[in-house]
Length: 155
Image (cartoon, rainbow, N blue to C red; front, side, top):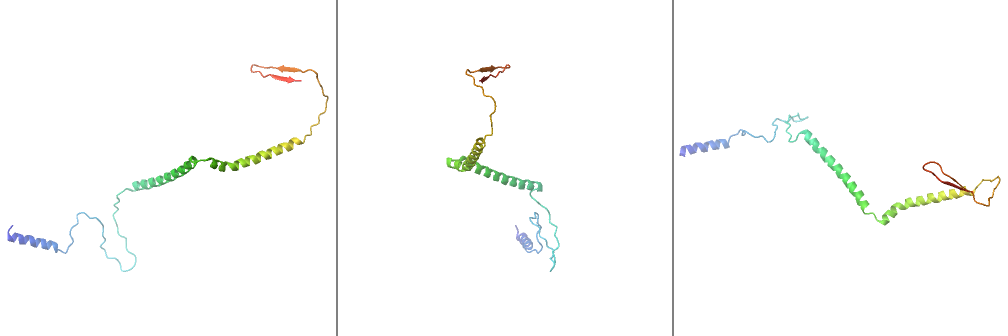
């Protein structure tokens, strides 16, 4: 390269470096609003491009799947606790749980037997009529039908 060509190239490089206008951006990565803001009062709205990476329906499905996953996790934890409790059943645990029911059943049985005895103690039956006494035993047997039933009357 000759000296005059080198000087021209250096001059071009210096002019490009000291240029006051901003360089042309080929790939913008953000939006910057260069308008002047008012000194007081509300700021006017600025239109902004909607550049979502994920469509709205996909975001909705993602949120719903997180909710379903959390719900299933809660149900699974509850089932685990119940099954863990059932797997560690001991004799003392069974007795502790069933003791109140056994006590109620015993009290109910005692009350029922007392009521039964009180009712049977008062008899108002008066037997009136002739009494027959046979010296020999009389047996009567009756059978009826294919599937018969035998009824023996001992008198």
